[in-house]
Amino acid sequence: MKWSYLGAAFVVVYFLFPLYILVLLAFNSPRYTLFAKFPSLLPIQLTLNNLESALQGSSFVDPFVRSLETATLVGVITLALAVPAGYGLSRLPRSIAYPVLTLLLVTNMMPAIVVGIPIAVEFVKLHIFETVQGLSLAQTLVTLPLATFILQGTFSSIPRDLENQARVDGADLLHRLSSVLIPLTGPGMAAAFLISWMFSWDEFTYAILLLPYHSTLPVTIYTDVTRGNLLAGVAFSLVFTLPVIVLTFALQKYLKGEYLSGGIKG
Amino acid sequence: MAFVFFPTVYAVYLSFQSHGGFSLGNYEQLTYFNLGGAILDTVGVTVGALLIQLALGFVVASVLAREFIGKRAVSTISIIPMGIATVVAAVTFSFIFQSSGGYANTVIHGLLGTQVNWYSNSIISLLVVMLADSWKNTPIISLILLAGMTSIPRELYFSAAIDGAGPVNRFIHVTLPNLRSFIGVALILRGVQEFNIFALPLILVGDHPPLLTTLVYNLYTTTFPEVGLALAAATVLLGFILVFIGVVLKLTGGSR
Image (cartoon, rainbow over all chains, first blue to last red; front, side, top):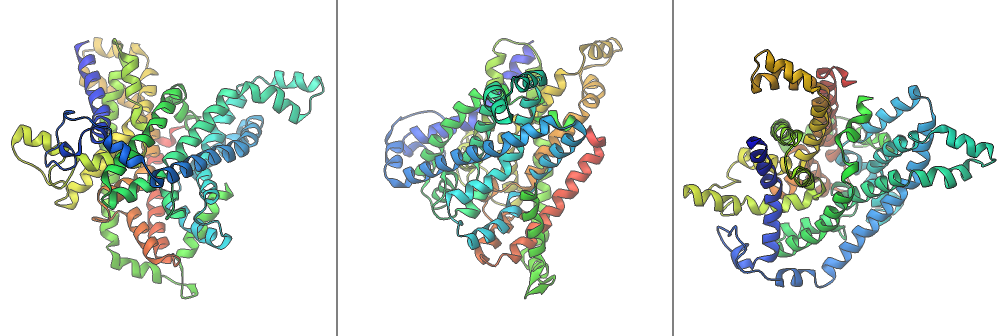
């Protein structure tokens, strides 16, 4: 029993320490953080000046809005494509659906940096290089397999009889989807949308390859930090992180290990 | 699917194109950019980070597999890093590990009265990359291992204990064999991402030493829109990833 608490304490410290440092950097006076050779581990002089000065002006608002746009667009495109794909796969016999799902997961293993470069070349030709729409399409490559996977599971869990009853009552496919299936799969769809949204919010590789100049928040943070604009980088990081932590808590029940490894185990 | 595979195949195809025809020219040029070193470092980071993550993942999972007061709070805290953007993790760790001073050095200075330059040579700076990566990605490994551990029947442990096996022996002979397929899944999921590790090294160490991904990115930005050279490096990376997937699948017996 004693070991459990010791272990738990270790886990808590290990996972929270870097976050604590981030908060210190954001709220402690820079005299004790950035400009100190051995920065203090304790909050000495708390101030809001860091955040205030960093968050003023367009250098924060524009990337923030662009990130929001991209993430929402990715979520919408993903759902629009993954709902039919997931529904179709859930109604196919397992012998066909399983290989397709496995292949979908393998596609996720293709390195973004390998896939991204030819996409950049094509996007330049199509004149969607350096646009939010182009970036969203590229990020959908990664979210679509995941979302299809989740929705396939949700659709499979709905008893077929329910759908057949609706069919007997004379509902065609569109009606069955809109009045029977989609309401029942609400939680799964919400999870698929939020996971896609979170992925896009966090995504860096496609963003820096396809939207290098006026980019989303992750790339902005990267350029700020490499150009020595450290406080801005820290402040952006904090603001950038908060929505994701909230979403992670909301999504906790979907982020189970069984859920992630289920498809591979078959 | 064609959606994803097409760019990949196209990338490989383009990497063999230079001077308007099929050639190995890109690959020959690539050897001038310390390709060998980048490959070695990438493999090193992958193996090192996977080992650290597996070890820590086991610790976290074994803690969470027990019952204790406050377990819910601890398990919630243990998934927070999953939600932290890679870039944010990288920025935070860049403040913890600095070439002179920094938070890690505050602790070391306080305890030992000395300090470490975290970027004095490539091995130690790659270690920083591995540590930062492990912080961010231990949660997913521990989630998978935890799912596996809760599926092992308690009776196995009881009978092993009756047969006189201590905690270490029980771990080696009961836990590990039963977790084989879970470890396999965790290794595939993380290993592939580890080869692709990009934002962390880019922010933490830049291009010194280069990994395959940062090498690709560097070549991409300096030569765009001529991408042959970058794609040649990308193809090398792709090859390693395919080999890695094959090896892990083989080792874990297909894991199905």
